[in-house]
Length: 223
Image (cartoon, rainbow, N blue to C red; front, side):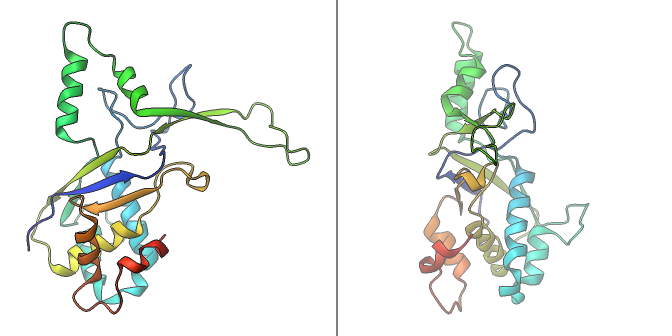
């Protein structure tokens, strides 16, 4: 079987992939971004999302238990014995090259913060007083979000040739992972994950050779 090269992350809504800290004087919660100002989703975070999705559905696919262990590693694994490593989900190489050239050029370079602001927005929220429904004092927070429509790609580094069952296990976890980041209950972080950016191929792989029902028709029920 040919090895799949990357996982594509399509943002269907604004998303807040938090870095666990804010930017003084700008936002209370900052998104993950690199030195060029380009937002990204960490590979370890993406792997954790996929593993959680698989654990929530594994009872439906007992025949894939061994394959899942090879894809996600055994429980409590601290040695990363998986046959595939997932890199950070970043913008495509061509876009990054153009941005890097604009940021590092000698004449009128673009500040990395300007790049970040072009791809993000700031949302503000506050808690409510239960008794009155009015905004609670000192609870106003600002959160930076990546605007919907951005596409990220996480490279797959295979350490061994995957079997059909192992690829199917990965595809199922991708389709079942529908949200990421902060504010999931507020409509943020709705994502679509696919193998090599091909939803149809991902559906076919997840369906398996002996599927009893078309997975495409039940995709909306996942997550």
